[in-house]
Image (tube, rainbow, N blue to C red; front, side):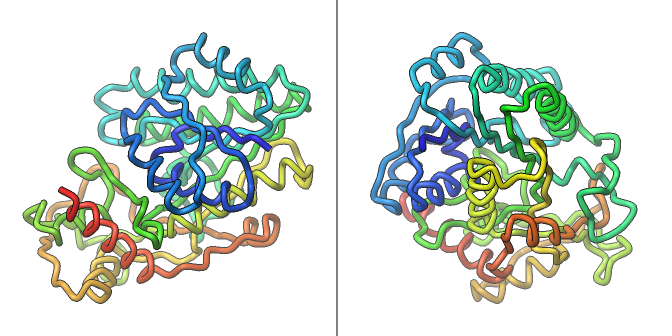
Length: 340
């Protein structure tokens, strides 16, 4: 079966392509390389022994999307990662985010609506929950008013898919709400490679340890948590990637209970910023230069997943530990810098 992975050269996308190819799926990637590199194709091929089909294009071009589906009429499933994802940037340029994250989703769904049978996996986020009323967070927790245009695009994206599925029984879709993906493939062939200053904690940690950043800022130590720093659910990217393959297979084999479903993807355990730093120091043997600074606007106190639905319905469970994720992230960072 041929599966389209949009944004397949990105952090989560590339790891998912690896897992798809390992399971025997034929993969075609669409990516405009705005936040990735074609070099990732080499890493994927080195791991799996097979180079995926690659189409360099921008999904914002409606005609090109249509032409793609004519050329690849045998695509039976789509995993949609392609999106702009920096929360702070989305506040500055909201229209760019709405065009890129919403317009492209509409174009893909319009094409899939034309098929007699189509399966669609959407890359969503735990940002839809905001500061949840109860922890751990279940899929039935209320979706809160978005804190940023980025978060809003995930909420609107889910609504668009749900509304489309209501009138398109031939379309089956699953929205996967990620918590905090970290780590890298154990081969160090692929990993997280942010362009510019990292927006996420773990690449900032590894870049600080490499000397690329002077120090890591920990935003606040006066939150209502055991050590005062924010708590998140950090999930190894390989575990996350495997969940996509399981969710897609569920749809392709018609094991879904409704034609639109939602699952949380996390470990079910929260780790504080200081715990993540300690984990890094343990696996790397390096002390990290960090400083406590003022809170950052928009940060919530704590978020971690209730994973029972994904565990029981998908038969999926996160297997890799925080230490394993931090070790792989550090090994990846060292390899990347050794090439430069």
